[in-house]
Image 1 (cartoon, each protein chain N blue to C red):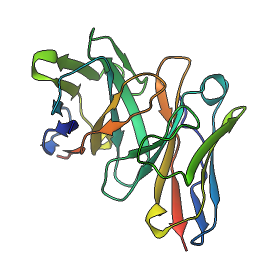
Image 2 (cartoon, rainbow over the protein chains, first blue to last red):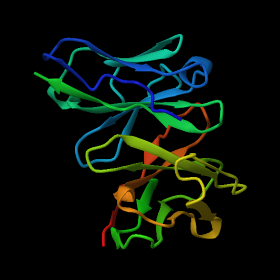
Image 3 (tube, chains in turn purple, yellow):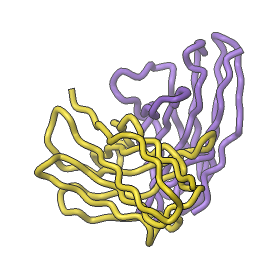
Length: 110
Length: 119
């Protein structure tokens, strides 16, 4: 199972919006609405930010939103803040009942 | 407050095995899955497998299939990941994570266990 494709890095200024894409296949992202997104700060465990494509867990800011079109899911962060600087990973359920992560995206807040 | 508490760092020689534990602190095992995810230094997250804590059913990634064994002890509220025939590329932080249902994502993570494979 190949990793889902994410851009290696994205950047934005405080207050701006950014979008991170996550491209898979019909056997994972495109076939199921079981895509989730995680934020990981250096040296820390990942934290769930979005589940089931577009749902936010309790306690996650509404500046984070998710969507999906075809084989590509997206995470959008609006009103960028310094604390959003982190690595972001998508993951999807697969037709083999496994899970697959994306390659990760480093977000830099300029 | 429910949390997953993992065992401490390990240093192993190539060819050896390692067993990492993940204890549900503050609650008992209920109806969910425990997934194992690893992250080599400076690298991406890699999914390894999952275990249903109720019936013990497991599923592994093709990459580690045959070398990894996931088990659980419901009386101890603990899940285990054992990786055998260790090689240098297995050096990584190993995480356990909870998935309550297939739609929920991994909503709770352990703190991670560093496993170093070195001769």
